[in-house]
Every structure is written in structure tokens, then in C-alpha cells.
Length: 395
Image 1: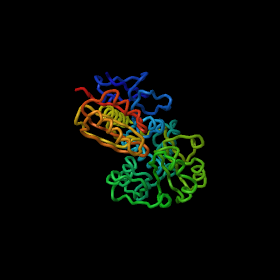
Image 2: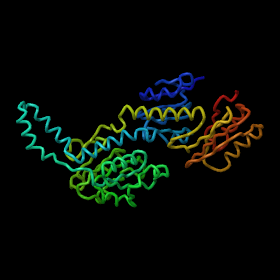
Image 3: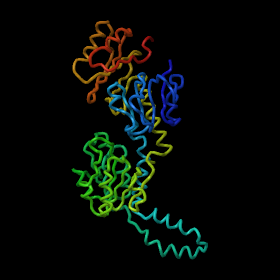
Image 4: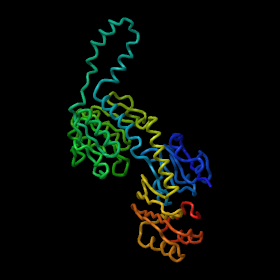
């Protein structure tokens, strides 16, 4: 029987093509789907059918998904980190240029000259007025990059190509991200130190309890006058009241962001874009492809890559019959599962177990196929969240 994938947004065709029609049914309406594939749809916990075993978002953030509720039900939530990184990086480059030169002001001024028909007079007017749009070059200036993940590391590299000095801050920098990062990126030991020394600051952080309102009065009090702040990460990272105060007293020269908000729209010292950081054909394709491939690998093999609530785990298939067991991350549960298999003379051919926070996840290749009664006994074990039989177990 084909697996049913419920799509709650329009998903790139290039992504959907990674889910073969002979194996998957894809539609925007299903009563009992196996999985959900979405982009920006705001998903409520009560709207997730009991049949759902996985959710994938074609994008990086997962604020629109009730992750904790999914974890409690043993549902891994996948995202697509890095798939839209180049699109966001290019928009940050645009923001840096708009924040350093009088481009927008100049374009608006030229639009007011549409009634001028004399070319010589137009040139004379432009020469007389262009000095009011004079800006500064990025070369030689210092950019602070807060968050050095997939996007932040690309922004840092781009700024180096502009001839800027780059200072980075990321207390949670992964080994993989560190390898990606140029040795020319200087490291700030504290966030306040970065804010105090940079001409431009670009934010690339997720929204967490620890980052919500992170850019506040105290942090903005450390900036040098004339600093330009760019936010192409999440609106909630910047405290708007503190931002307005910093703009009003000149500590910040400019705020450039992808998140329009009342109170900021119309200010001469604010440039706002309509949340278009990932709005390119290429980014939408890349996100959809990554999300679909991760979803397929989980549904067909139980493997997990780029989940925000489950451990990363990959086990090569050595038999057609595989069990996935999700349980609370407490002692003795896996032992009890293996004891049930042993009691039924079911051989464990290969297995892998990993945990993340309160969840443990296990893949177990077995032979022969367990009966429904055996699976039910596993499901009734205290601490077991769910048990899934994967693959053609009767081949």
C-alpha cells in the first residue's frame, strides 16, 4: 500500500519528484496520512492525525510546528538547514550595500524627476544633487557575524571577499561549522565585545528561549555610534523597544531587516523587506528536495538526518526487516525490547541506538519477522513511545 504524504503548502515539484508515485500518494487532503510535508503552514498539535509518523519542513525554522508535542508522540520533525543559505547570504549582501550607500534614497529622488524632458538639464540637476546620496565603501569596515552556521559562515566568507574585516561569535559552534569557516574570521569571546567593535552587525541565530530579545538595551548600549544592524534571522531576536531607542539616540545609524513591524515602517533609518530571504526559485527547490529526501529515508529505512528533536542516526540495511523503537531516554528499556525478541527466537542482525535529550531512538535489523503480538508487547513496555515495522519483512 502506498504511503500518504499530506502537503500543507505548495511544495516545489522538484522536491515532490523525489517521492516516487509508485510508492507515495501526495495530496493536500488525507484523513490518515503517514507524514506531513509543509513550509510555512502553522500546524497545531491537535491537527496532527494519529497516523502521522514524521513531519518535514521545506525550510530551516520550525516555529510553525509544535515540536514538543511531536517529541512526546515520537514524531521526528525534519527541517532543511543550509538549503536556502545562499539565497539569504545574497540578500544580506544587498542589505550591506543598501546600508552603506544612498541607493534607495537616490532611486527615490530620480523617480521625482520624471517630468524633466531636457537631458542636459537633467544631468545638471543630478550633478548638483548627488552629493546628498554619498555613502561609504564596505572595504576596510568591520562586520560582526552573530551565529556561524550554514548562513552565517557564508555571510562571513562573502564579507571577506568584499575586503571587510570579519568578527564572529557563536558559543555553540559545531565542529562541522568550524571546518567551513575561514581562518581569517576573528573570534569574539563575548557578544558585547563584538557589538562594541563592529561597523556592521549581522544576526544569524534561531529563536530559542536564550535568543529571544537577545539584542536589548544593554547590548545596543555597547555599539559605537553609526553602527548598522542587519537582521535576516528572526524578528524575535531583537527587542523592538530597545531597537527604537538605539535608533532615536543615534547609537544605530541603520536597521535593515526582513521582518516589517508596526513602529518601524516608514522610518528613514530603517530598511525593511517583506520576508524574502529564502524567496528564490533555487532555494525553494533545494529546501523541498532536502525535506523530501529526508522524509523518504525515514519512512523507508528509519534513518534520521536533520531532525530538530531526534538524534541523527543512519544504519545501512542488511535485511529487509527492520524495527524502529522510540522510547524515553531512561535505562533498561532497550534491554527489555531485546529480551522480547530473544524470547521469540528472533535474531538481531544489526542495530544502532542513539539519544537526544529526553528521547532515545533505536534501529534494529531482525530475522524472522515478528508477529503483531510481539510488537504489541513492545509497545506496552513502560517508557516505549512507539514501535514501527519497516520494510518488506516477508521477502
